[in-house]
Length: 389
View (cartoon, rainbow, N blue to C red):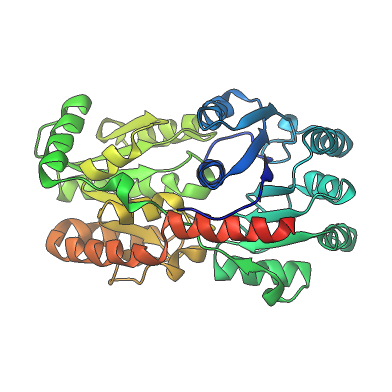
């Protein structure tokens, strides 16, 4: 993908201390921006969990700045608002970007960098990777955000539901909020039948499992949001009915210890492998039999889009923007949020009807044409370019 551009300088800002879908989104935009001729800087937490992202950014030729502007997660990881504001402001003055891209995983986060961009008179595109219902902002908080928006800030939602929630909480017209869907790159997940067969054998050998084992893969941070705890009570029922099934979880997170205890409590720890953070997600997706995503809330999950790209059958929930991408019983199985019974019955159906699930997966793979990474990058870079003018 190419765009005819004058010299442009982009600063990427993230307020998260952990690497997840929103942070990998930053990497994708950085990759596209570099390819399109942008000069790119990126600033985010120097935490151990973000070290791999810093490395990946630098490998693209992006200048990385260790910047603690974290206001997500546990209070003990936060610095004060004024230090966050001053750190961002100093960086903006020193790097002098034409435009900033501020990526947030919630409406309540990121006020310090937004205000710093406004004071430094640097236009900003603000991407909300997730907006939860029930979030409340006080009138002063809304006022400060409205003031910052007047200084050249554009808000972007990744789903129409998030767009609606943003407009409702901020009391602004939804038409004033851009909507750019997340996307995945189908080429990353393409493989031949021979490659897929070899990958399946390799993964089962790695896990010490028989070649005929059916693997149910969950990809995501080990957190309350992703719903791993909802899956645990279902596992014994699934194993009793389908003894050849094993569960594999790719990801790290704050709930790992509690989830291990829950697996032991239900006596299913021997049927579950926690893989930790993996750099070979395409291999895992192409080598598994079912993608299980029992999430409680989302913006528009990258892991699900990647499963679609790999042609892997999907069992998930009706959370947030998922229903804008998948139709139940057409592209996959979508249960009610936090409904363990729905999750169990959908897993039973998926394992009992593999041909039906493969047909849904193929329709989901075709559906991905509307949600490609290339379209996501192109639309975002166009917005960034317009913001520079």
